[in-house]
Length: 123
Picture 1: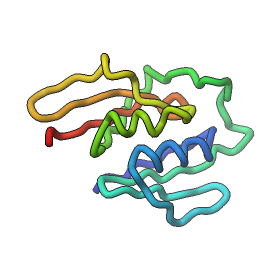
Picture 2 (picture 1 turned 90 degrees about the horizontal axis):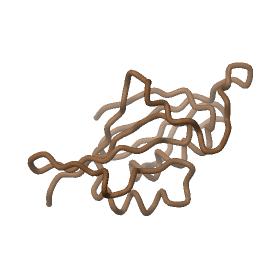
Picture 3 (picture 1 turned 90 degrees about the vertical axis):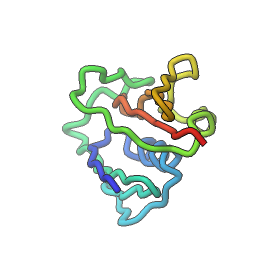
């Protein structure tokens, strides 16, 4: 299992986004920290202190220049996309999916604008 650590401006929104993306549970939760753990990975979220917070305009500016893109395995990209429909984060539409071999990939963004990727193996 892989774990990533993210500082989150939109802490609660990011918590909910990663819970949905990973079909996850929460542990070690406090006002400024939470461990979001799914079967295929976990995300440790830290709340960004207010004095260091980024612009929180809605929707968040996509951070395409970020030098890292976390990738998460999901059972179904389509199901996750639907589950995130009411979220301030999202997976991009199906026209942007790419398949290589037996794996399909789709990028998206979390509520803070970080680019993420979901992938599913052929069934």
